[in-house]
Length: 193
Image 1 (spheres, rainbow, N blue to C red):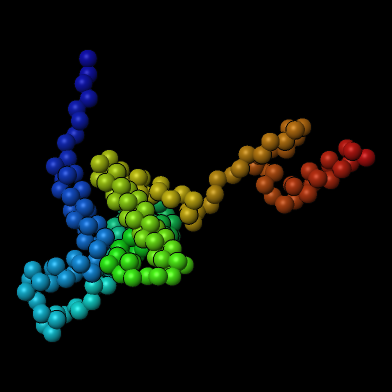
Image 2: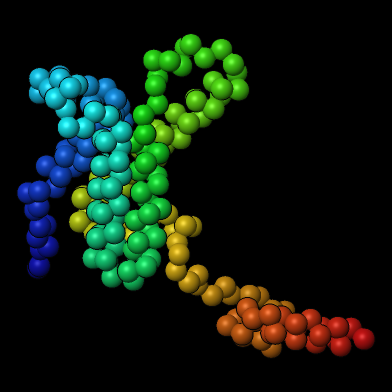
């Protein structure tokens, strides 16, 4: 009787907690920037970086870099890995951009309020999706978790569609071409005549 030994990964929980820290900082970048600057006793005139947008851009760049290398690790071609990294990078930018929640109550125009609330909802959905994606990756330790995410945005060749022909004369591979489609239309017109 063979027992399957589960491989323990001592870095699983620390990495999930580190990503959680990054994502909490990215959720409120302005607040996080002010908190970190005051915790370090750095005054505005002495700061090297004097904008909270630095957090948004750094976290977005790190996500792009991480996704690109996980896709290469999953043996995805370089151009597709770059496309996947940029797609998730745009999503990370939306997830880490600052939305001034304190000023929402001051908005009186219903259209502007709807846009701000819609952007807030979009930000939260992107944030949640990316965080769960990275937790799944570290839980499974499988780079295909990231490379197979958002397949509807893939840059690679789409798999051939199988078409159902009533007479079975045409193969599924050849029926996707425009010439094969035109020939099948001509044959069906000849049969009707």
